[in-house]
Length: 176
Image (cartoon, rainbow, N blue to C red; front, side, top):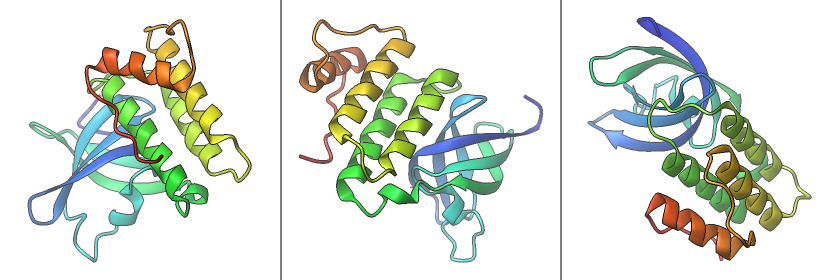
């Protein structure tokens, strides 16, 4: 990586930082999970704001910073708008993002998991899809790609219990 670089990534986390900035966590195609500073993104006139919403797949341009890289430009590639009107589907996108965040350390890349995450968000945007099966498949493949293997039983409660043991955290459920 040079002083400036670009990648595409899916926004998995955002939180406010100082008066007008946000820390953005992306699961990126080329660099894995990266946290970066989006300066001025909370200002109404910011051109980056809508491009770095949660779950957006965006092309980002970054500059290496002393402690954190800084976003200089961002452009949406896919906002996965098809699921944003459905609270259950948004909850599943949160759950998938949470799992990606738990499974990967900063700068840990995994192209197959990146593709899996992007495909899962695309399927969430489709009207006719079995959501329970989609998430079971996501969790099974994420476990496989990450090298953890599968538990003896692969229905959702057993998968969730197995994942909680791996990440040593309780999973948050956003739907019921």
